[in-house]
Length: 383
Image (tube, rainbow, N blue to C red):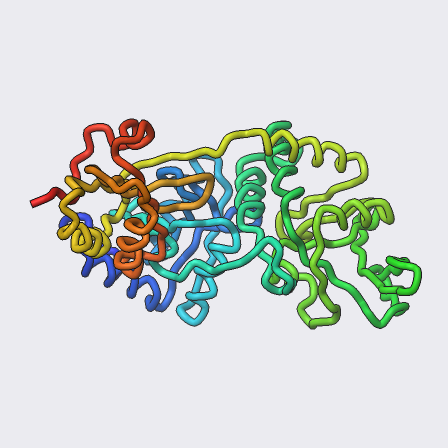
């Protein structure tokens, strides 16, 4: 039995913060881990655990092999990707890049699901980032991985394509350019005018049917699979650029060495229409109990409430809004008319202990709180 598995067994029998921290350290420092990898999506195998996008990690290869046989019986095509401690933190960052927000350790044994951001700090990025190297599209990656993992490419239903098209429309991309101008390599170079006074070479990829596609990449890791020798300069691009490039070739291809999504001229209108439909949909919110109870954070909140004689009780849940996770704290009592200062004061004291998860506050008397918390027990009550 691995050291990590022994710790998980102990933690499941006696949940406490110290054991949880030891498990995180062991995950970070174990010499080797084995990751379930999907053959269909050509990425980490993606599961759903309590509404969380989960990767499956194993502390012993024999644990993975048992999981492999189990998934084979279910018709799932997976393989093992071994990860050495030297590349451990890069692995966790790659999970985030691919849209994961949790990991399951030793599924099939005594297992444990952990929030990815208990192990690493959540990277910050902007959809409008000026630096092309910083572009990330975790939501697009997650959806594409799920669709291609669960379906053969010629059997994907229209609704799944519509969801994927919406993320493609919203995405930002990295594209390679050759600013030297007219140099064209055999099978991988093509130039065209992008303005009246400039001429830049953009590489194209040719498929077995002789069709040319301009490569677009969702992030730096996907781009490096294409340009390992740093041959090209990179630029940021959006959906408007996809439209321009499609008009000058047979189409574009997103992550050609990954999920390999090809978009041609006929698909552009469909993508725009899909994005309009998605913008009409309501925000999806789900609320439940934390998988790992944040004892220190709760203690810090309680400290701040002790001298607030107008607060009768406080309750805790964890909330998933679309793909953003936060703690949801409901305060019961005679709250002041303006609650912003109160919420900020409590959060400032508690956030350092919140496992890098934001804290949202709500009045317990609100209709939403009544529906969510129901008969929940408070973690704090007035003296």
